[in-house]
Image (cartoon, rainbow, N blue to C red; front, side, top):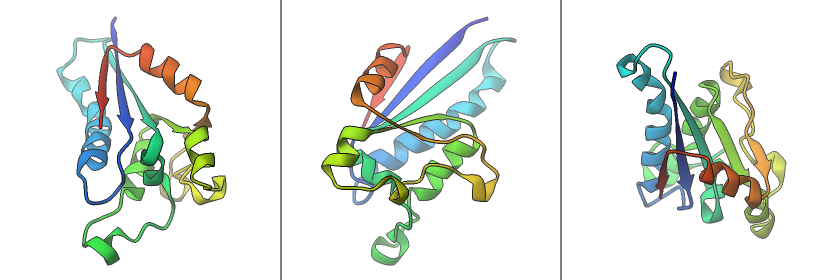
Length: 137
């Protein structure tokens, strides 16, 4: 049995750039690759929001109103619904003056049981060092 650990580090703004959306889409879709794996093999993704990327985790995004696109709020919730490990950098949240209750920390409204974690950057660094494949965007 082998576990491939995948890391997705999102540090770009949620709008005007496709990087955040593509990373979230890849993280979510990583759960479908198990049909191509040998029996017992697993894929274990971790999604880390750092820098301006923490803005992707804000509740009540108005992307459709302002830009005519769906928000990443649903992508974050779908990640939690699929039990992905979602880490949000505490230092960057504090630097931007964001309160924890303004962040998407769960997906209970769609049946999710996993919560996002507000963690120090040192924990995100450990997660990045432990993965087999790392995507920065």
